[in-house]
Length: 78
Image 1: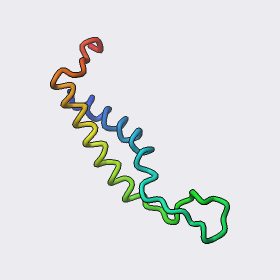
Image 2 (image 1 turned 135 degrees about the horizontal axis):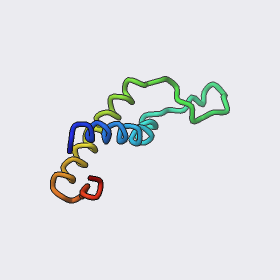
Image 3 (image 1 turned 120 degrees about the horizontal axis):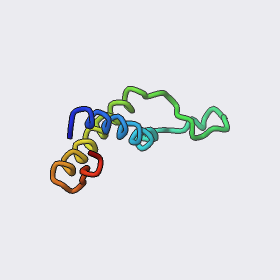
Image 4 (image 1 turned 135 degrees about the vertical axis):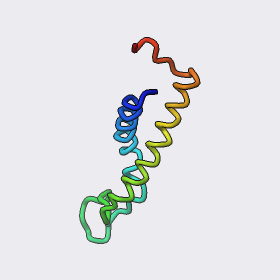
């Protein structure tokens, strides 16, 4: 896997996993009587970005190992 392909893969994996990580730890603010019970109490962007980046590194590493071992072939892309 080339460096440019690894970066491209990481960016794509990062955006896809963002929607998986985004709801982690969300607590509804139902005490205020607002009709939006799914709205988070506080913004926690730093935590979401950190967790998402770690998950993306792991997934990208798994993809790189699969390509290196031949489980996924990229011959048709050359």
